[in-house]
Amino acid sequence: MNRLFLVGLLAVVFSSCSWPASPEARVIDFEPNRGDPVVSEVMVSYYFEAREPEPEEVLARCLTDRGAVLYSTVWCGPCLRQKALFGPHAHLLNIVDCDEQMEKCRDDNIVAVPTWAFRDGSRRTGPMTLRQLARRTRCPYPNR
Image 1: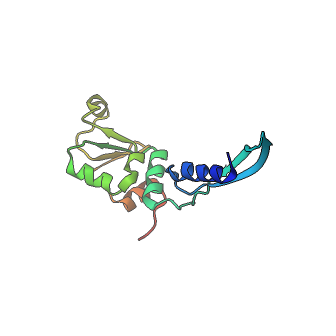
Image 2: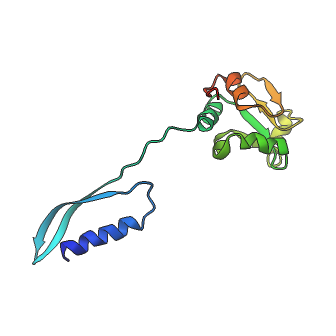
Image 3: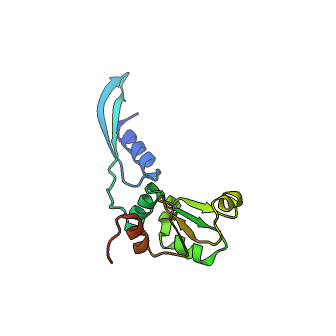
C-alpha cells in the first residue's frame, strides 16, 4: 500500500461520513514493513463550531429545570400553537399528553388544555407568551 493510496482512502472515508465539521486526518508515522509503508498511528481531529443556543432552547430547558409542566393534547389548537412558540425545542419541555395519560390529568385535576402547572402549585389555563413564562419562572428570555 503506498502513501498516495492511503491518503486517498482516508479522504474517501471521511468525505462519506456526515459529521458536522470536516475532520482533519494526519498520518503520524510510517514504518516500513517488507517494502510497503504501514501506518503505525493515525490521529483524527474534529472541529465543531460552537453555537450559541437560541433563546427558545434556553427557555425550554429552564422551564423544565424549574418544574413547569404543560398539560396538552395533540388535537388542541391552542396547545399546538403554544408548543410551536418553542420551535424545534418544544421536545425539551415537560409535556403531559392528556390523551395518552388521562388518569394522570384526572388525578392532577386538569379540566382544560393547555394548562401550565408550576412547581409552587400554581396553574395557568390557556396559552402563555414566552415572555410571560419567563417572568413567571424567572427564566432568561431576551426582550425582543
